[in-house]
Length: 193
Image 1 (tube, rainbow, N blue to C red):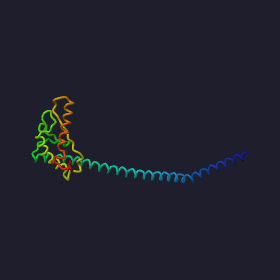
Image 2 (cartoon, rainbow, N blue to C red):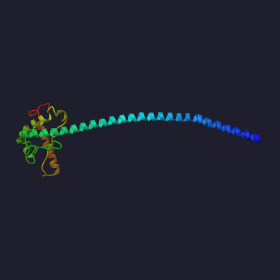
Image 3 (cartoon, one colour):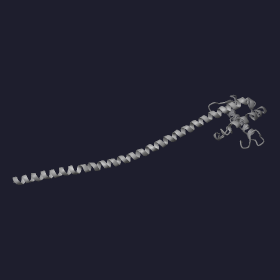
C-alpha cells in the first residue's frame, strides 16, 4: 500500500510537472495572442481617432471660413454705411444715417404736413434729389450683390393715439413707395424698381 501511495504521489507530481510545463509552453502563446488582439484594437482605435481628428480639422476650417465671411459681411455693411453718409454729405442732402444699421432718417416735416400722409411738393423734390444718390451707392457694382431689399418706414410725432400714429406712419410709408414706384416716376430706372 505504501508503494501504491508512492506511485500515486509520483503520478500526481508528474501531472503537476506536465501541467506546469504546458503553462510555461502555452502561456507565452496566450500572451502573444492577447497582445496581438490588443494591438489590433489599438490600431482600429488609432484609425478611428485619425478619422475623428480629420473631421474636427475640417469642421474647424469650415468655422474659420464662416467667421471670415461674417467679418467680411460686417465690414461690407460698414463700408456701405460710410459710402452712403459720404455721398449724401457731398450732395448736401440732410439725412441722418444710423452708423450701426444704415437706416436713414429724413425730416418728416420736409416730407409731410403735420398729421398728413399726403407727400408734399417739398417732399417730392427732396425724394427726387435724395433717391438717385441713395440708389447710386446701393446699386453700385461694389455693393449691388449685398443689397437684398430696401425698406421704407413712416414715422410720426407722439401726438395722437398709438393706433392713429400707427396708421399714419404706415400711410406715409405707402405714400413714399407709391410715389417712387409709380410708372411715371423718372427718378429711378425700371430695373431699380
